[in-house]
Length: 112
Image 1 (cartoon, one colour):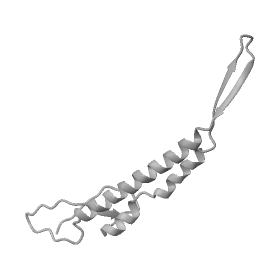
Image 2 (cartoon, one colour; image 1 turned 180 degrees about the vertical axis):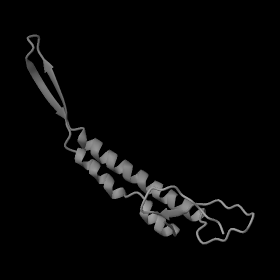
Image 3 (cartoon, helix red, strand yellow; image 1 turned 60 degrees about the horizontal axis):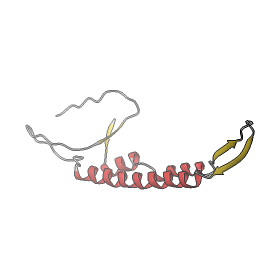
Image 4 (cartoon, one colour; image 1 turned 120 degrees about the vertical axis):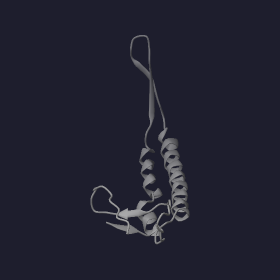
């Protein structure tokens, strides 16, 4: 385990807005409606291409939200940076750090 710099932490944890383009695969979705006559036979079938609105709206909305979240995350990392700072005896500091680990073991800190 080792502590990462804020810039490296940001690069490893930020959302990728481009992955939200997968919502565009919803574009070919159609909504079908049918009507039947009094004998139970289908007389009218129509389709509405809801995917033309649904896919781009979800993709665009999620891309905007991810970009906004990334900007906020980066500013919080930099505003609350304690990487490399010295914490004197009896002093309390609050901040954010990124820790790289190969496993999911519990975090144990030793202060010297």
